[in-house]
Length: 637
Image (tube, rainbow, N blue to C red; front, side, top):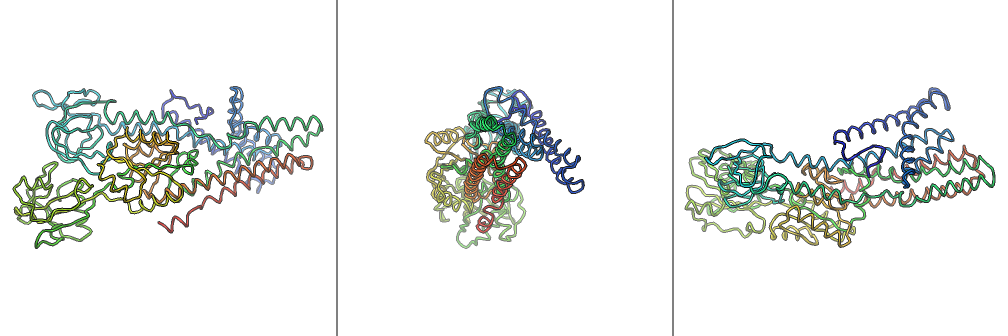
């Protein structure tokens, strides 16, 4: 909900919007400082002194005026919100010269509105991050084979472009020359780099890792897969229904009812003191503070546990969730390759196999090479600098190590070099099951193979089990990987179902399908390919520490430490927060009913004291959430 008093309009630029939010926040904080000064001033000048009252009056005007003005505009337009209740409380507090209470109501109202308004800028930030993925320049080839640097915006279908190692691919296209490995995790979610050969497709926004590729452009600009992802985010954000604040659902009758009661009492009794008491005791501070104080306490507790909640209004959705949708790569899995198997040949030790392969791969930047280097470092295996290093993109490497020719790569690559691999026992886990296999040959003889895998996060299985135990009915895993890979990971974690080979539009469609089945859907992801689904779900949770900026900006909550066991904690604190809010609201309603019933016996000054006490009770009840779950989570983690 974008509040009118902040004047956020569609035609205003993001920088101007951010400036207005910052100025409103500065004014809110300044008003809070004035209220604090009024209390501190009582120590030096005494209670009721001119200086302290002046501070309180200035703070109340600075904080209360925007709320009252917004309430007046809403009434003139014929609709009401919680802001009208706050305005009534501020006016009643001014009438009794309780400026601190008037300022306190305005402070909490403005602060909660600013937090909600700030999150409305997240969609534009995510789109800007998407744009940065596509380079501004491209290397276009002419008919004679010459190269020309041109703006990416000038590319058209049919153009031929050259992409060097380390470059972001500027457009969708088909490889017409060269061999390379491409990191497509940002688009497809594929956990392993994809080897590209002539005839295969490449996507804009993906990264060329090793070799030089010549590509014929098939789609450019907004027609690319990356461009469609961008538009999907916008569409999903536009279809998200804003969550109404709990108090708004029950108080449309409140303002006219209180005014009617006060008018009736004054009409029959002509007792001005009792009428003021009714207005003061009916000031809905307890009702107004019920939600924001509990939300602030819950957000503090979540932040302590490494959970960043960006949209306080969406916190309640976690507790209502009946279905969770997980991305696989980088969310359930680590997104990195690890060596999981060393199988040396006859008369070859595992350390010798690792040393030979890692030494030959020492000059390579391929993810498999990095996995070998990390394992060698952990095992304290001595490596040798290779000579005559040659990398064949998509196949493997050839190098000389200690005077011996070493070849590391796919089985087919070794066979092309005339090396017989049959003497080494073949792996029982094949690439179709999510494993990558590197064969190692030395001086023309195969000496073994090395298995690599993208591992699941160690805490993921425990998190899924706990989510099912606390009432989540459906846990779906989505991935761009092959069906066999998805099946293995989903079975390992205990997911209720999965969907493999998903592009961003597929993930979005599945999320919408689950919502149509009646579920409240929470989507958890980390990559650009997850951003549309994150925006389309009832709530999006991003893996913040390892995730992309696009995923974080498209989500309402980020797990800053990538620990999935924070998800059950988040569900629990959301449900606890809803219970505390319910307690606060119930107390506020009972307090007002009793106060009105006993208004004849309560003078206005005592009514103000009771009113202040009711606010304190609500604040302290909400404060119990600050340390919620800290011991449980720390013991488990």
